[in-house]
Image 1 (tube, rainbow, N blue to C red):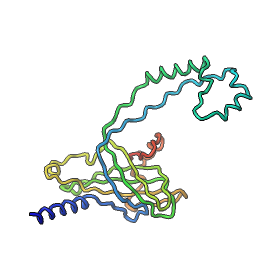
Image 2: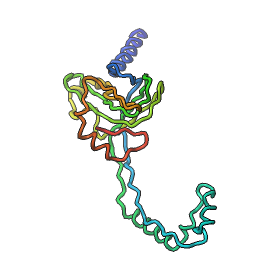
Image 3: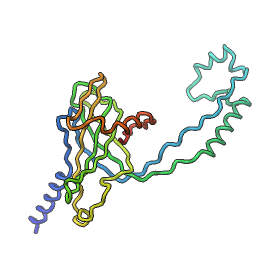
Image 4: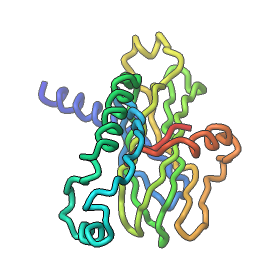
Length: 230
C-alpha cells in the first residue's frame, strides 16, 4: 500500500513538471519560474487637477523669505495654501474629485514570471508570452502576450507581472474539464531590447504581429512594476 501511495505521489509531481515548460529557444533572458492566477485589479483614478493658487504678495513670497523657505523641512506646509486664492483652489479641487467617476474593480488574471539576465548587457524592455495548450486538442493554442519596461542589470533577476481580463482559454473544452487534466503551460521570450540599443528577437516571432497593440500601449500611462498586455 505504501509503495502504491509513493508511486502515486511521484506521478503527480512528474505530471506537474510536465505541464509547465519554460521554452527559452536560445533567449539570453532565461525564465526560472512562472505561474498564473485569478486576480482583481482596480484601475487608478486619474488625479483631478485644480487651479493653482496665485502667488499673493504675502511675506513668505518676498525674495528674502522665499529663498529662506528653500531650506524648510520636507513636508512643510506651503503658506500659499492659506491665502484666499489657495483655499478657493483647494475647495474647487475637492468638489471636482467628489464628482469624478470612481474606478470599479476588474476581475481577471495575473501572469507572473521570473527571469534571469544571462547577457553582458542591461535589459530595458521584454516582450513575452504565456501559452496554454489544451491536452485534448493540441492544435488549440492560447497566447497571452505582454510588454514590460524594465531595468535588469547584468547577471540579475526580476519578477515580471501582468494583468489581463483574458484567461487560459477563450474556448472551454468539455473533455478537458471532465478529465481534470490541466492545460499544458509554457512561457516564451519573444524580444529583448537592451540599454545600448541592440535587440534580440526569437526567430519565429515578428514584431509586426502586435504592431497595433504595441502602438496603443506606448501612448498609455505605465504603472509601476506592471507589464502591459498586447
